[in-house]
Every structure is written in structure tokens, then in C-alpha cells.
Image 1: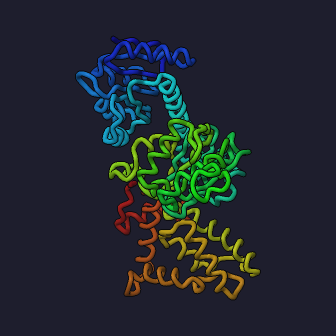
Image 2: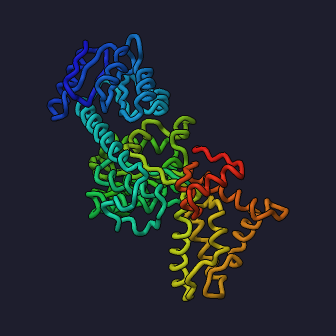
Image 3: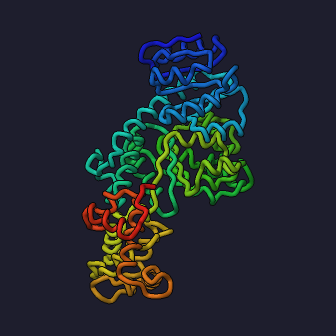
Length: 462
């Protein structure tokens, strides 16, 4: 069968026509648009081309083309479309493959039609959020933020961070679980707090939990709490993290460090939306938004079996990636001056400026520890500095790194060689964007193009 209402954003593909009609009835009852229905998977890609659907729901096992192959073809041609896989078996390997191909979620038969409706609605909302973000990829501007004051603590001038802030601002208004990724020290915890402050839950608690700190025996007690007498030494009732964060936000820092056994317990609470305190048979309803963070590649952790694919789907309803500081060169000096003011005041010193050799060395450094490393570097330098200017000599480790960089590790080099290396580094940091690179270098675009030609630099975008 094939039924396509005019301008519907939803296409459901399943060879079971009875199930197709049941899903359509459930969506209409919930006030959602009438979906397009298709029982022949071979026609799916053609329908997508002609009608521009926002959401595709695919049965995994179908004649001719299975759902995974349709998913692969659709996401390859139309990566923005949200896709939901329906399967008869809750299979971890299937979840990993669906993630690889870009599925938004997967549902297990027999379908809970209420949950199916909620999942479809969330997927449509996420599509709209992503389309809203796409408008700001011009690159984005800090001036377009509706709540600039909310981001005041995260010092940033690089356009890459304008996009991060815009993503945070948009997703904060929803109630999606958010996954924030980025290297250690980029500010994932700060961004999580900003999302909470901009959300409808801002007047409720924000509870931060460091996931690697929990051994298996402590997990349930810390997350779910206990009642008096639950075990030896339980002399009074204790609230767990879910109780403490009730109505607010629970921030799970370094989520990929949680052991697999405990991942299953967390997943059960997310799906059931209730839990039991240790020693109690009374269910406690969960009304908590989850914001998680990781410095790892979470998809890779799923593929390697270290992180559950089904938990990944539940936590990653919206994803924000914070770029490392080495890719945000425009942020380095503003952050350094910000930390100089803080630590100069904290130590009763009147150090006002950075000297030029220090500024050059900071811009040439890779900052593997990101913003956190930069602050520690400035804090230590302030203690060592005796003048009113923060000098390169007060940062021995950076001084050594700068010397090695400029000298090629051994022999001294010419000014032209130093210039070439710096131009190469800025081009690499901007992904080959010549306009941005020229602005950072303080030269015109034509001058930069002459340098690229004269030095034989590969200035192609990466």
C-alpha cells in the first residue's frame, strides 16, 4: 500500500499494513500530522525525494530492502532527516549499527503506541531545532544570541563558540536530554549549568555527579537513596541524586566512565521514569532532565562495547560539541587577559597586561589541557611575576615550548621560516578558511594568498 497525505512531514514504512494503520490512528489521536504510509520498502527513497519528509520510521525486517539498508540510503542522501528504526528484537548489535548509520532512536515490538507517539514528536522537534541551528551556520554571530548575559562567564570571541552558545540557547528551551562532548578542560560543566539556567527548570536544583567516582556497590545508594533500615548502618532516610534533582537538572559528568552494569540500571530509570529507594517498595516518579558530558568519542565507545547503544540513544536526544581551544585561536588572548585579571586581584598584585612575546607564545601553543590549562598557566605566572606586566619569562614551560617551536627543536631559524610556520598553523586551526585566517593574522586576504603561494603552503580547506 502507499498513502501520502499532502505536505505531511512523516513517512512510516512497514510491510505490516495493520500496524501502519494503528500508528496512523495513534498519531492522529495525539494531534500529530497524518503520516504517509508505505508497505513496499523499495519505494521509500523515491518518496523521500519527492516529498521532503522530516521523519522516517522504518521496520527493520521487511521484504526486498530491510530497514537498515533504507536507513543507510536515506541518511547518505538526506542526512538531516530524522530516522527511527523498529525492531522485533532488542539487539545491542543492531543499536550499534543504527547509530553508525545515523538513526535518532529505535523502538522494540510490540510497540507501545503512547511511547511511539512521544518518540515521533521528539524526533520532529529535533529536526526543527537542527534546522534552526542551520540558519546560524553563516558563520554565527554572538549578536544573534537572545540571552548574551547567560554566557558571560564563558569568555569567547571565536565564531565556533557562537555556534555552541546558539545550540545551547535553542536546546535549553526544550526538555531534551543533552549530550555535551569535548576534550578535558573546554568547559562542558559550565555549558551544562548555562543550559539549566536558560531552561524552564532554572528555579529547581542543578545536581552535578562525577560518574567515574562510583563503585558498583555505591551506585544504587547514591542515585536512588535508601530508607531507614535498608541495610546495616542505614540509620535514617537518605535522598539519592534523582531525588535531590527532582524537577531540575542532573548533570552526569564523564558518562562514558560508568561501568556497563550500572549503565543498565541508569537506562532502566530513564525508560521507566521511576525508581525504588533501597529498602522500599514505593515507586518514586522521575521528573529530571539529564545533561551528560564526555571527553571521549561516545559513538566509538558504543562500537567497542564499552557503552550501551540503547543508553546512548536516551542520553543523546540533542548533541553539542565544544571545540578544543587550539581550534578557537581568537579566544586564547581574551581568556588569558580574563584569567590575568582574576588571579592578579586574588593575589593582591597589579599586573595589567601581557607582554608581546608572551602573547605570541600563547598563540603558538597547542593547549592540550584547553581552557583549564590556560588558567593554571596564567595563575602560576602571576605568582612568579614581579613587574606590572606578565612576561614570557614567568612561564618557563611555555617559554621552553615556544623556543623549541621557533627553533625547530634545535637550530635557530630565519624570520621567514617562523612566519611560514605560523601561517600554516593558523590555516590548520581555521580548517583552511582563508578569510578567518587573515583576520587572525591581522593581514589582508590578498596578502595571505601571496604568502600561501610564496611559501608553497597547502591552503585548501580541511
